[in-house]
Amino acid sequence: MIDTLVLGIVLGLSAGLAPGPLLAFVISQTLKYNIREGLKVALAPLITDLPIILITLFLLAKLSNFKMVLGVISFLGGAFILYLSYETIQTKPLQVAYQDAKPQSLKKGAMVNALNPHPYLFWFSVGSPTMLKAQTASSLGAAAFVTSFYLCLVGSKIFLAVVVGKSRTFLEGRIYVYTMRVLGVLLFVFALLLFRDGLRLIGMPI
Image (cartoon, rainbow, N blue to C red; front, side, top):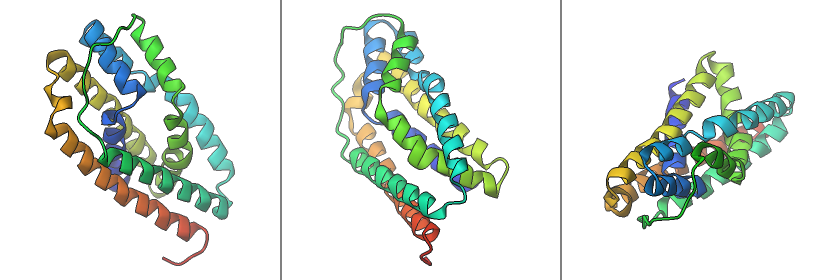
């Protein structure tokens, strides 16, 4: 359970802090209105991701006896995390600028997240397989993973909304860049672990 807890923390932080459409909208609403509007956008994944999680869990549960298929999915997850690792390590300081935006932050944040392909790719190739695997090892494993993931995902975006509302220097400074690089290295390690799991599932002794 400790492994899945740590994995959820690292994945959640990297997803929450990485530049993307939802983070841009968090910043936009915070600058245009106030921190409260930015916080509403940060909560959007809690609304949009539940159907994705349920659907992918259902599909993967049906495939639980097909180890070759699960091995391929594990390879896809490893490739996706490897891509995220590269993007995270390459993160540059963000130039925080004023953007025009309108109210209805939670609704529009949910739309932004629902149209972003990353949640779908993540939950099909990484999130749901990790939950199913954790569930077989411990009854609390899956809950630990999804709880730590969303606490860090939403929590980090809330943190950034507060920071942007009070000061822009964090996103434009070295601390943010170095934090992302450390997370990128950790993601690289987890990608290797997914590749290892994929090899085991297709029958190669590792």
